[in-house]
Length: 162
Image 1: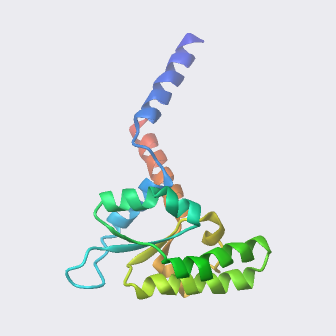
Image 2: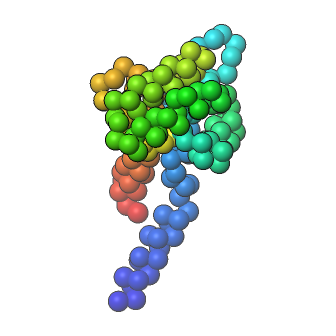
């Protein structure tokens, strides 16, 4: 019985020493691995972050992305007031068509500002547009990045026999 407990503790400690797998870190890693090129010569890579006001105020995405050398572009006050917040309100009212249209506008506003990609940093926004929507090709879903990183980590752990 003691050997099973010891084995579990060793495996648990190996997991705990693994670099953290968070949505923010996995998004940053995925962006780095994508080897994107700036849309404007001589400019840094510009990454848009579309999220609720609370998520943007927390600053998690902005801090991590900036620390990795990305320029972060957030929706301006007018975009937040006239598209993002009303889109969330529309979702809460179950007005999916209205929410989709408002989200598309918010995405276009960020894309016009020469961002390479937009992180949809709100669970409500990630599944709002149909999978075949062309705008989604310019977006990154944090949950997808997290799932892929977790799968890669698990495959590596199995390969190493941990």
